[in-house]
Image 1 (cartoon, rainbow, N blue to C red):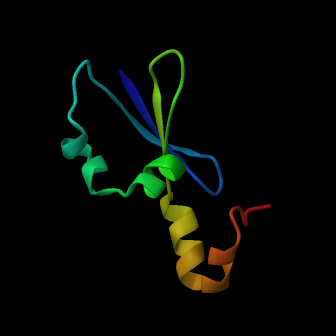
Image 2 (image 1 turned 180 degrees about the vertical axis):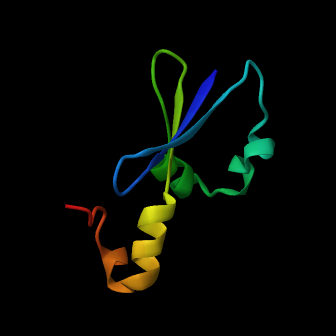
Length: 76
């Protein structure tokens, strides 16, 4: 299984994990609500899991400009 972390705002690849067996609790997925899971975690037919997170650059921008939280994407 391949787990790929991408930024929800700019689409940049943050990182990935390759593992044949990994527990949801190890990744912290068990702490998410059903709604958060639907928004953040997607899987495809090849068995890859894509996790939408926030990269450091976008987090710094959100810290500097909190009004950007209202937009899904703010990087032009």
